[in-house]
Image (tube, rainbow, N blue to C red; front, side):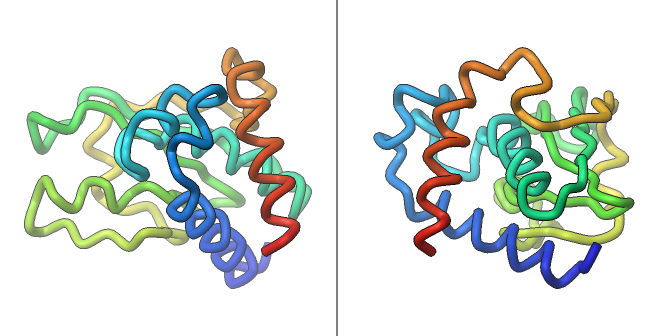
Length: 152
């Protein structure tokens, strides 16, 4: 996998999500439709991103769910991907407000950071949205992004 191509693709998806009003997601995503991206949007975003990465690169991403964060009482959970050994996280910067030592970029593609080790982690070998219980809920957001990014 070409690291630069993966990073560029993820940046394109992140920019799209930043620029799409949350009212566009009200009927298709509980998090993207009510919260201010990226805050609270990591699960839906990661699952849909895993599917988009598969469409673009034919690689299956692992989905990591972190719970019980040890480091800040207000951080509870986070979800991110791993693609061929690289962490892919397009919502990591939502945590910058919690600690002055956090200066995470909007799109992170790279080696595992110590931040992730502070969670109790469960891993799903296939993170695509249609491989899990969110299949129906995320179908609409996936279709919207897939259709709209063709124009970008």
